[in-house]
Image (cartoon, rainbow, N blue to C red; front, side, top):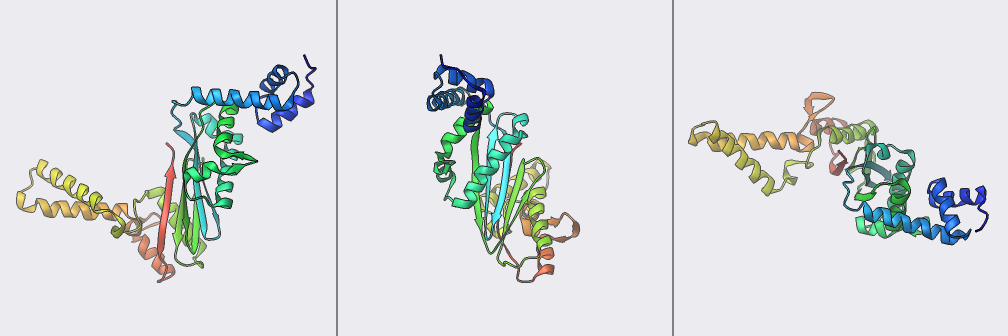
Length: 273
């Protein structure tokens, strides 16, 4: 059996991210052959990932980043809050986000097919799963392109937002406030015109059923249902929501006070837990 030196173990650990004892064991089994030791560690990582494939990866790190008029958001999920707060895990999530911002893939599958440090990202995630000892899953990726994009990353890395504007010279405080509004109030659309007829019909049906259960007269049930739809749209659409910092005005009014021609072109919001 080859004499395994501490320097070789350290080198293998740096290359794979595996624990010291795992690296030493792999080198011993590979009789000191460095490349074979790397293969052994990756095989074990794949085996661990396979065993954990049916686990629930509901914790994680949600990250958003902007580069000019492009903003990307990812969620790297894991099994436990302990790992979600682990520095190595968070750094790995950030490296995936940086890759997304640099390469601008079309969708999640295209992102997984990109290379990170010379390896396909999907394989790197499997390797990391073996190293960390939990199921890891790149659960979400999306992006926004606009004249101006603002990101908000919530403390704890469990929530992020992106919002796009039609003008590049948006007041920074306004952009930040709108991004934080989205985080706090979780709108489903920019304006009522962006809400699908299916969603509105569902809310109208709920309103009718509620009114009937309360014994309201049939001749006013529809009016009550429409009132509930109007209330829903006010609370669920960004521009019609009350501004969290000043409930006397809506987000639409707040934005127009800054610039009458300013418009929100779209937004993203994603959270774990």
